Every structure is written in structure tokens, then in C-alpha cells.
Image 1: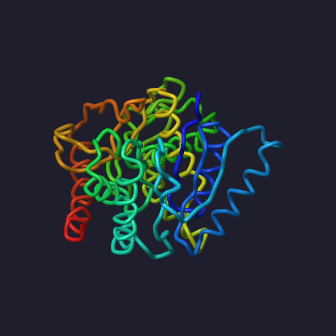
Image 2: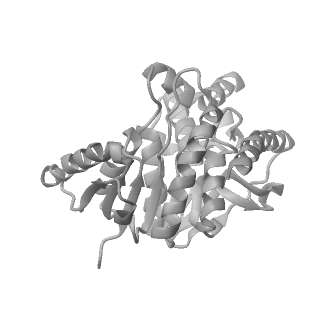
Length: 313
């Protein structure tokens, strides 16, 4: 059976980790694309990874390019292209620059990969995935944003750190927009099946929720130049893997809502099932009044960015 084809739009830090993880998981052949000025970097990174196939034990055709013709027929497209955050910048500060980049990418993907499952990573996430789908016109089940997986991974990691337990035993979900208004749900978080609320006092849980909301900014400030790349890449690959292998994993993702959670016409992070059909189902969690209010607050933040996108696209 022919290997699947994965296109990575953006050859930066996240793009490099995406390529390595996709290869190590044997998900398919990989093409990394960036602007002509960065074509050599893409080719160099991919050649470097190709040269470690023997020692790492994976087989994949790996290539770098600046020519969109080379991504034709891709089964999965992961978009990371855009300006990364720097200290003092909010995700929304990136909108002006990144909406232009995503507009161009979406037009090329529409022409070259009309059947691809598309995962958007570029910030501000919720508005960029909205822009991408508006331009491509692709089915809502084939265009989603990587946010909830990352936010949930961060929340679970912080819980495991606090309790000094294996993160494998932590189960949780984070709803809402990808930013400081995201909505972690400690009420339904469990550790080895035990409710988190029985294992940690409220002030500890509140601190974890706050750290989760500011996790990206924490890393931006520590790095001093750039933003997180390992965790976003791993999160996007989890989504791609579930699609390519029809795993039907339940993962939080930014998806287009048409009435679920009382929200219509916007991309927002909610738990979904990802399988061979793309986003196959949105799972609705029964929320308490304060959780509903927090989700609406998060939606309001997304609405502002989407309104800016609509003016430009």
C-alpha cells in the first residue's frame, strides 16, 4: 500500500519537530515547505533527518521545497507558517501579519490538496483556522485547529507534576479559545480514576488552571526569542495520527460549531472524535453555570479576532 503524504507548511522550529515525529511514527512521506528565502533551510533540515533514518529505524521520503506544486495530493496538511510570538506580544498581536500568510497558504492548499485533512497551528489559532476554512471552503470536518490537545496536555502535565504521579493516569479536557480565556475543567479531571478535586485543594487547582492559561507566555518569556515548539508539534501529530490511522481518539480541538454548546458560526476548542472521516463527532459536555459563563467569555474573545479576519479576508 502506498504511503500517505504529509505536507508541513512552515519550516521553523515546530515544522522541524513535526517532520521528525511524523517520520518516527511512520505516518508517511513528508514534504516541508517555506518561502523561497528559506528553501535551503527546509532542504537542509529534511536531508539531515533523512540521513538518520538508518540509526532511528524509520522509512520515509523527506523533502524540502518552496514550490507548492510539491505538496499536491497530500493527505494531511499541517500549517505552522507565520510570525512566532515574542516577549510582550499577545497572540492577537500576530493577527495582521499572520492572516496574510494564512490567506496565501489556504489558496495554495485549496488548489493542490482539495481532499486533505488540514490542521492549523498558526496563532491567533481560533481566528486563523476560521480564515483558512473561509478561503478554502473545505468541509468543516476536514479543517480544525490544534489548541485543545496542547492546552489539555499542559494541564495534565502540571497536575502530574504537582502530585508526582505518572501523567498517563491523568485525564482531563480544556475547552474554549487558545489563550488566557481558555476553560480547563478540573471538575471532570481524574487521576487514576479519582477526581482531582479529591486529591488537591482548590487553591492548588486554581494555580494549575492559571498556569495552564499562561503556559505559552511562560515559555515565550523563558526562551526570550520565539515560542513553544515541542508540545505544539506533538499535539498536532496526535491529531494527524488519529486521522491517518482511523484511531477515533477523543481529542479537544478547535472545530467549527453549528449549534453545539449553543455556539454557531465560530471555531472553538471542544472535545471531538478524530478518525478517517476527519472530525467525525463533536462531544458535548454538560457544563455548570460558571463553566458556561467562562466558555462564553472565551467565545467573546474569539469573536473580536474573527471580526478582524472578516475585514481582511
